[in-house]
Image (cartoon, rainbow, N blue to C red; front, side, top):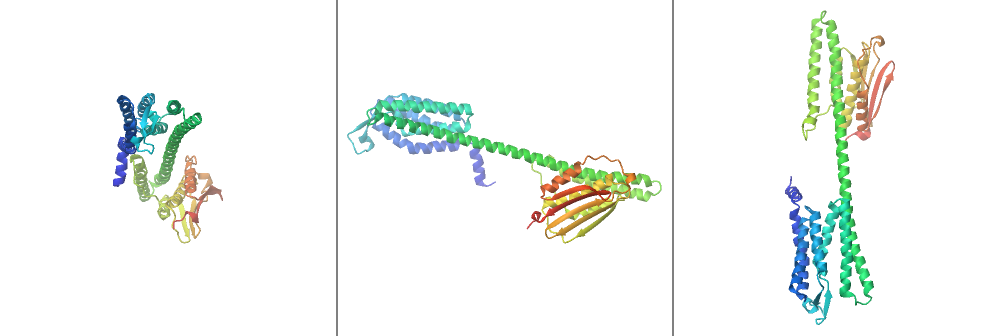
Length: 412
C-alpha cells in the first residue's frame, strides 16, 4: 500500500482529525469578520461574550459532524437558539470601515458570519441519520428560519418595502435550509444504493463461486469414480484368470484416485483461504491424457484433432476440457459394454469445437449407474459463461455432446 493509501485509511479511521481541520479553516475565514462586528457593537459586554461563545460552539461542533452528527447538531441548535434570543445590537459603521462613518445600524446577533456554519451540521445529520431524525432536523431548522426572520423584523421593520424584504429574506433562509437538507439526503440515498449494490454484487460473486466449486467437484468426483468403478469391475472379473491385468487395473485405480485427490485439494483450497491463489485449470492440452486414462479402462476411445490450435481464453479452454471430461464420464457410466467413443477437436480461424460421441455399446448390457444430469447442466453453464454454444442428446443409437466457441472468445 502506498503512503497516500495509508494516509487515506488512517483519516477514515480517525474522521475527527480532518473535521477539526475543517472547523479551523472555517474559523480562519469567518472568525475575523465576526470579531470585527462584535468590536463595533454597542451592546453590553455579557451579550457580546455570549454571542461570541455561541459562535465558537457552532464552529467546534463541526469537528464532531461525522463521529457524532446528531449530538453536534443538537449542540449547534442550542447555541443558535441562544444567539437568536439575544437582544439586537447597534453597530457603529465607523468601526467596520464603511463609507458612512457617522451612521449606525441595528442588527440581530445571529447575523454574525459564523452562524452560517449551522448549515454544515444540518448537512451532516441529513447524510448520516435515519429518515425520521433527518426530517426532525429539517423541521427544527425551518422553524429556526422563521424565528430568525421574525427577529430580523424587529430591526428592519422600517426598511422601504420592509415586509417584502422580510418575505424575501424568509424565502432565502428556507431555500438555504431545504437545499442543504436535500443535498444531504441525496448523498445518503446514493450511499445506501451503493451499499445495496455492493452487497448484491458480493452475493452474486459468492453464488457464482459456489456454483463453480460444485461443478468442479462434480467433474472431478464423477469422472474419477466412473473410471475407478469400471476398472474395479473389470479387475474383479479377470483377477483369477489374469493376475497381471488385474494388477494393471489396480494401478489405474490408484493413479486415478491420486489425481482426483490432487484436484480436489486444489478446489477446496478456495474454501480454506480468504484470498486463495488462482489454481491452474485444465485446458485442451490435457485432453490427450484424459483420453488415455479412459482408454485404460478398456473403453475404445479415439481422439481426432483437425486444424491448427488457436489460443483460447482460459474460461473457454477449461469449459472445452470439462465438456470432454463429462461426456467421457457419461459414456463410461451409461453406455453398454464395448462402446466406441470418438473425441473430435476441431480448429479454424473463426472457431474451435469439441465433440464427443459414443455408439451406445451393447444396448442389452448397459450398467444401471445413477445420474441426474447435473454434470451436463454444469458443462452447459460453463460453455455459456465462456460465450460458447452447447448441445447434447441421443444420436445414432448412442449419445453426442458438442460445444463450440466462436472467434470472439479468442485472445489477441
